[in-house]
Image 1 (cartoon, one colour):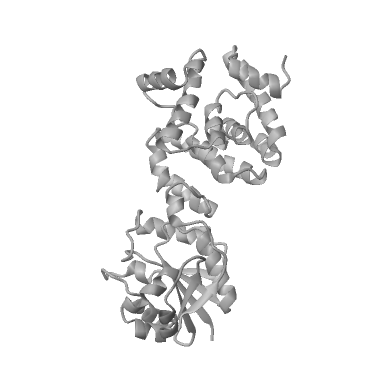
Image 2 (cartoon, rainbow, N blue to C red; image 1 turned 90 degrees about the vertical axis):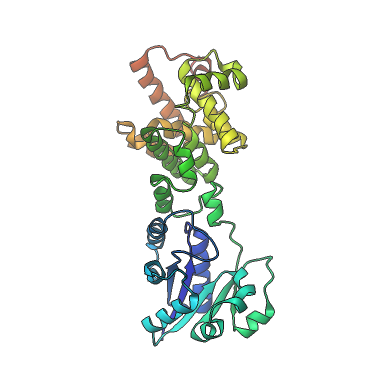
Length: 363
């Protein structure tokens, strides 16, 4: 007889917190297999993206785990409401000789007495709840429905925080899927640029994330700066001039190409509520560079210049930056200087000059 854990949810999207809870419960109860049941139309919330996207992300997130799989009973159901009791009946038929467990949200323990056919459900499966620190639950319901409480750490990640651009604690393939399909926060970012510009920004963000991870730099802050770095690139001329003269008068003497980095920093703060100085500075100088660049700024600058779709073989430079940000940044800066001199001749402006004086030791 095997122990099968049914883990239902909207998974909008699935994140690493879901995986960690599943692993913790699996270990604590000696579960043999965890089956994720995607709620197509959950009664307690309205998913923000189509069920097909949530299913695709679920599949990606579960791929590394041999004892984790997904099921499509509720996904394929034609019923307007999918009750947990009906799902339990389905699993009992599927695994007639095995022991069934059903993981529910800790907050749902207080509502169990209102669940459809809860008395029958509690006899079909062992109801399990993961103890989330700081929440009180009904002792009566725990006793009456024989709920097993599994205690463990509180994971800060939530689907809401991922959707709202406040966490990227998700599988990298899921993150790529969100970006490529313009889901959640990515939809808003895409509104600021053309398809081609957005595709470039995605490449920059994903490369920046790798560099940040390997150099132990804040991943979320780096990712935000990289994904938003070009949101000022395609602003209309009037808005561009208005923002520059109102907020960045001291930089109006620079070449016009530099405007978008300042406009982008302004939009990041105004429209995306970014208040981190490190993120804003990284966006603000990603095109020209500057003296005393912060580490996130170095990552965004290099990722912007050497992301894989730039049209040249940047693999060696990427390797350099991934292995060591500071030395890699200097090599990318030198390579960019050489490229600009070859293709544009005069590359002088006070920000770029200051950057090269400091990092390339040019007098």
